[in-house]
Amino acid sequence: MILADSHCHIAGKGERKNSFFGALAGRAAEVGEQGDGYKIAAGVCLHDSRLWGELSVFDLRREVSKLSAGAAWELCIGLALGFHPRFLDGTEDFPLLERALQSCGASAVGETGLDYSVSIPKELQKKAFLRHLEIAGKLGLPVVLHSVRAHADILDIMESFSCSGGKICGVMLHAARASSEIFKRYEKFGALFSFGERELSNEKIAAAAAALPGGSICFESDSDSFNPGVAARAAGMLADKMGICQEKLLEKSAENIKKFFR
Image 1 (spheres, rainbow, N blue to C red):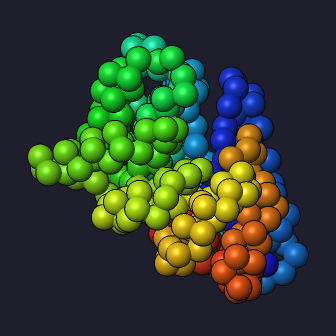
Image 2: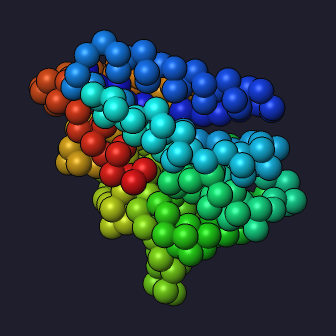
């Protein structure tokens, strides 16, 4: 059985952080006890800066290692930290973000990007996005992208950053909603495209997703907890479109999540 969810969240304060990790670990252990050959893969995104001081003393890699010890199943839990573009106010502490990424064993930066559906000034969003790219390049980490009505500007910023010597170590386009032409521009950065039910309900996006190579596709719940059932339904939707087995897509999704959150 494959349980894969490439993009879920942690939100809230204090004990909710602890209960989230506890529930995630407990779910993984529960599934793993059912038999050999299970693969459990999750990408967790934290974008509430109020938690970072607490997370700076939490070592995700150590916790996953303890959970996996002696298990007859495969487990990958990757953590991304970043300032979400919807909640920027100009007071973001980027040195704190860098320290938190290093201290808690994070595997990616984000989610970050641009969201033009909100009133946050575009220039503030662009500056924050560039800072995330700089930190990710310095630490050798990939970036989880959030884009709403902003693909052209995000790609222009990444292309300019790269051309000026900046290092981009991979990107995951969360809630991937774009045309085949836009997907091709992201592919230049080795992009992984993450789809949920919402995205694949759109015929044009589903057709563009079906044309992507399997090595660049994964599935998400975008929920406030590890929810592989929702991601599996998204995989089923695309499998029907592609005329292939749902389990095959889920297997590929788990592999891609593991590679991204290395």
